[in-house]
Image (cartoon, rainbow, N blue to C red):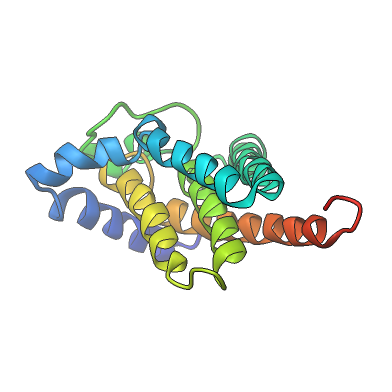
Length: 190
């Protein structure tokens, strides 16, 4: 990574991790990044899709899960081992001032798999439902964005890790929405 970009990333990390610190964020951000916190939302999405779309809803849920699984696997098992970027708590410069609000975590930092997974799911749903519910893009980006912001705030990822994970997740979500469109339009399936 070019030195100017590395320094910018470290400065943005410090701003989010230190300068934005407050008791409310200290309390809520660890929850926002925890997948268990979002289980009610996942259950609602699954139930709503089956109720509203019947057989197509099952396909939506399957492809939503596959988009997250594909994003997760490729991010964590392929990209991270290739890039090998240290987390902020292990970075030789940042670790001296990093405020760790949760344990550091194992593995590498780039890209943020949380950002990749959640943006993949958000953009899959955005592309599927954008015509029916035009406002869904706002809620999808807000949801995935909060989870991604929380990754930096709690000290486990740099902003570039989250940004690149989000962009990659958007691409994955879009690709899986194309798969859905292809299967949905197939006369063999429906």
